[in-house]
Length: 114
Image 1 (tube, helix red, strand yellow):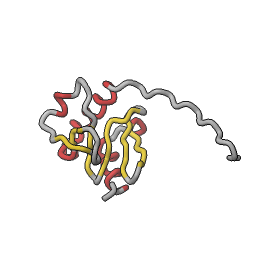
Image 2: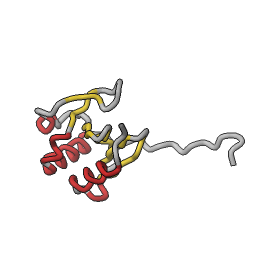
Image 3: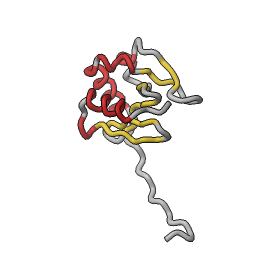
């Protein structure tokens, strides 16, 4: 089951980070970005938050699971939907602990494409 747009709209409204929090749809699921850094995934209408150094105190007690088969473990943040302040703090701390993404190189034009 893919994540619904209504679920994503609810999460975005709940977290209230305005333009700092964006999403990108991928394969029916969503990546959540804070300040251009991937901090979480929404898969099957569940929220999976990246584990990073420095956020153990905020992810303590959260269950762990895979966002999709074969993925590394993530903190499952569904219960934090009832505590938006803690969820917002966790996502901001996760973004702060992650490095800035590397700039993407421009694509080369393929032969035969106009």
